[in-house]
Image (cartoon, rainbow, N blue to C red; front, top):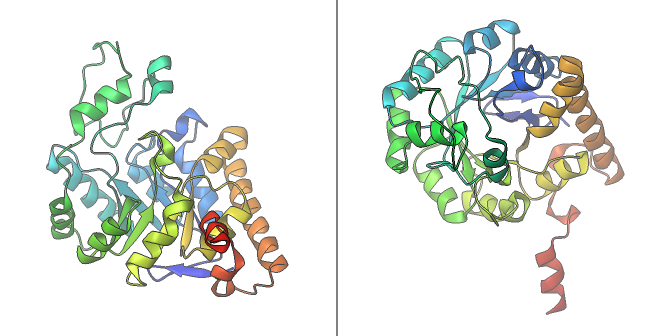
Length: 305
């Protein structure tokens, strides 16, 4: 099942997606998740919304890690976070591009969710905690006041100008954007719909993965996240052309259940399930998992014409 991503070897094509506020699940937060990922020899993408400082996560264990970033209204904040990640040995920047504004997250609104300000941001920006949350959540207000709705391809250019780290774009769901990403010189694209929380009826990522893979035409690796719950889901993504998959909620749930051991158990379970699926499909390596191993709804419709 071994593979590599940006030159880094991994025992399987499963990596940990960026999700914020892990201390909501376990007191050790992202430090526990980082150790779980390191124990499985896989890559963790640390969220900008980490409830542990970047320095704490970097010091927790020796492993390959990427850093997830948004472009803020204040570019100096984004630049500072990039410099910190670089200095602490992070190997790539994952730029989320599907959130120029926050979607209408109705569960957060109903619950008046208070998303704790990341300690990585607290000295860089501040919000008045006394402002009410009528008609929204405090996370919604945070996003409205800090994220830059003018996000464009020029920001990818800007990010490339301030870092030598490879950049992956997270939030690509169309062939057009995939081609533009390659033209912009990024190191990889991540097919993602932000956990289906940003826009009602955004397409499931598995349904647009093949379109993006074809558009990229092998120029850069294509990753995918969203809805990966079983090893067979990983297998399907590989068959449709993904280089690797990113898993967020299952790892978070494992962390909530049993801390570091729970997060590690989830990764190991997905690895075992993928290994079994490959064996039952006669695949000795991920390179042998090809398009012929899956049939999509489109295939079935075309077969009837």
